[in-house]
Image 1: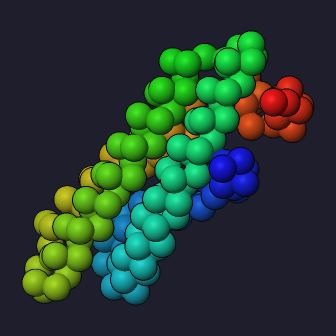
Image 2: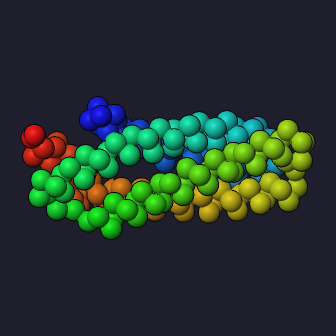
Length: 157
């Protein structure tokens, strides 16, 4: 369990980078009317969703470790943890839905015109969710030390 939780700090950077890069490619592809960027955005979205799922799975294990820390008397904000988890869950489901819808429109050959603009808006909204997730995750690490070696040394059964 701890080994999976230990992967969380490494894994989380992939969905952050990929989903923000997706947003950039989606937006730029539409503005520049560049199909190569638009197609690349779709591939990046797929990779971003897969990595987001991995981040959420490892995050669930990391939460168990954090709960164990709290039980050992190491204080951190439960509210920040819950907000981080909420935005992470929203983010993964939100981008999964975007992926499903985008796939549908591509298969139906309807990913054109104003539909592309709608996806730019959806991507920008999703980027907000990613930024909020990262902000609260960073607060857990940098303000409370959750997941750091110094704090982990205090977990001795």
